[in-house]
Length: 218
Image 1 (cartoon, helix red, strand yellow):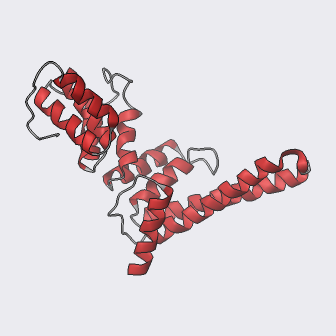
Image 2 (cartoon, one colour; image 1 turned 120 degrees about the vertical axis):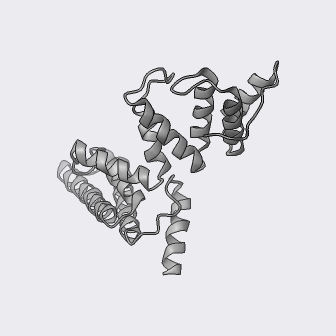
């Protein structure tokens, strides 16, 4: 089991996908199978684009059908992983099931999968509740409480993007009460996570004034 777990973790690092690092459920093997199928589909799709007019219309249809079969198989594997408790499988299923590359999942099913992924600490899923529900300046959200809740969760999970946004909210008093100490703390945390915009925000705020920092971004 240790060998399998290490192999999966290394593969996730290579493909650079944000996910829950503690997703060690029995659904992890389904997730790995789903990734393999999706990789095959993507590779075949790239080859099809390269061939272009070099193949007949019939060959193109057959090729496309094979690509779609791999994407559908990947979706099946991701859904199985989600059923067995894999948060990252749920997130991948939600994405693939709404992409048009595989069978379309119902809106209700997609929402359920995203929520499962968010609860399983998949940062991208948590951030979807923020980015998909609020306008660009965060002056309006479909569900402000949910946006702030998941933003804080993503920040605790190490998202520099989330921490930077939270710093912005505290600085301007949007969705949360204005709190410059918390704002600076969030910007510092985001900067430590490698977010360059957060460092620019710190430099901007501290250029003419020394704001306190409570070392808490929550």
